[in-house]
Image (cartoon, rainbow, N blue to C red):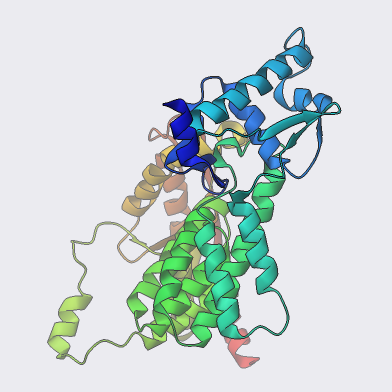
Length: 413
């Protein structure tokens, strides 16, 4: 029975290393959860990663065991290699030696035909970079690469030092190709495929800004301006929350382009007025993103120039107790509570936004400096004594937006 299964599945071995690590022969699949013995799988991983090299016994032993972890690593390695060959034969029906030992080194048998996804990806990448190709030919190569890239290189072993450089290498190729592919599609007015490709790329690395920019461009091309604006707001929150930075000028410019093109169907003014109403009863200050805050800031400054009244900008900073560094887990667990406390403590015409990862900006209008300072002090005291877990505290700073500053700014233009 075993011999007939071997004959049935004899042929090319298919190896997947992107998005998972598995080997397939015919309808038989070998993956990490099917291997008895973690070190057998580790050995296979290391040999596959170094499949184009001769691997010394010392190199394998250092990769598999820490110093003095076992008494006789050379003998343990020989036993592992024997068990690995048996695993390949029994699990995949392979009757050939894929792992060969000769002259003191282990090698992957290059004489046996295999289909390995990363090798195919590199071949497509090289072909797509050739000079003289038409756009259609490049698109074919790019599409093949994108389809081959099912996820990061050997993700279950991404923490291993000999996997990390290859993870970075293949992801860089993938992101480069996604950009080139989508730019060609956008140039040709083929917007719909860009959405799917970009969403996949964003799932791989949500902090590659170009993928977000390309997705927003696709939405604009499809006249889905509201989707473009929604995605910008998502990126804005993501980058503030995770990195403490704003999106690039490119993404911000696309946001303004989408906002300018988002023209509603003509309606009666009474319907528009109904839409402008807030969905719920107003409670506390208005919370918005930073771009909206800047726009309101400029409006308030102009109003102050005309009326002579001052507006005040407050900066609230969240730190660890006694100014200690604040861990990511501590801050995330209390951020929403702090935000809600700030919003609920202020008036309906005050504005709040998040600035970076650990700060909030407040705009306080129609108050004196003394009153604004009192409001800020009371807010800081209330939140610090209001049960933020005991490991965080907030502090505040206050600045006046003087009308003359805006006057000088606009006169000089």
